[in-house]
Image 1 (spheres, rainbow, N blue to C red):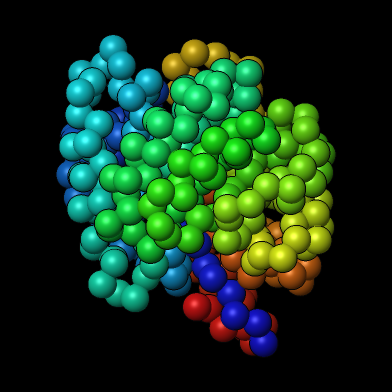
Image 2 (spheres, rainbow, N blue to C red; image 1 turned 45 degrees about the vertical axis):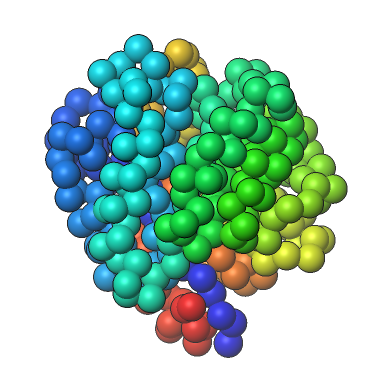
Amino acid sequence: MTKITLLDGGMGQELVHRAGDRPTPLWSTQVMVEHPGLVGQIHRDFSDAGATVATTNTYAIHHDRLAGTGMEGQFSVLHARALAEVSEVSGRGVKVAGSIGPLIASYRPDLHPSHDMAVPLYTEIAELLAPKVDLILCETVVSVAHARAILEAAAVAGKPVWLAVSVDDEDGSRLRSGEPVAAILDLTGYAALLANCSAPEAIPAALKIFAKGDVPFGGYANGFTQITKDFLKDKPTVDALEMRRDFTPDVYADHVMTWVDAGATIVGGCCEVGPAHIQAIADRLIAAGHEIV
């Protein structure tokens, strides 16, 4: 029997599905203003499904994302809203992971700011999250430079830092920058290593590399057919992405159980993974004799 930490699923996509609004570049942030309480309900649903970690809805709250929108200047207020929403489950024995997403855009190592510019921006978020979270979750890290900057910044929180890298969908041994995942093992400052927001089939190659390190590791994949060229344009919206037709809860749980068999002790889901997927994983873990912690 192995102790497994079960993460929640993809907040942004779940918000789009439930709100029924047309996605905007700030879909997950805007929903907190237009549909207050919906984020908290999703946190509860993931917790009810078995998740033992709730990830704050702060992935996309960056100054650069808010610039030129009606939310410009609400950076601190929006972080406070997200932290208030996650308080719905923080008293249930669920750990709260403070999410920090990439600056400028996801999956774009070419756009990531220089180290000297990035560190203060990430640090500001880590300091806002620190008093209300149990750990810092650095998500969708796509290059070694990105990893160095966000790890330096996250250290100010004084909380464990989990580093989640996004890998090439066709070659999970490489980051989306093309650099080897193994280069991450040369860095310090993380308490766990994860592969996230990548095709589930790409996760095992990353896990094989993580296993050579000395920290807990795992993965949480997305359910997109691929990251399209339209999504890599400026100010993308998720309607440029398509959900896989083979992404049922049972099929995704099959993938996750192979990761657990490979030594993963932290698993969950990213975009298009809903409470039903997390419930299927929880059921399979328990049936296999694992303990969810």
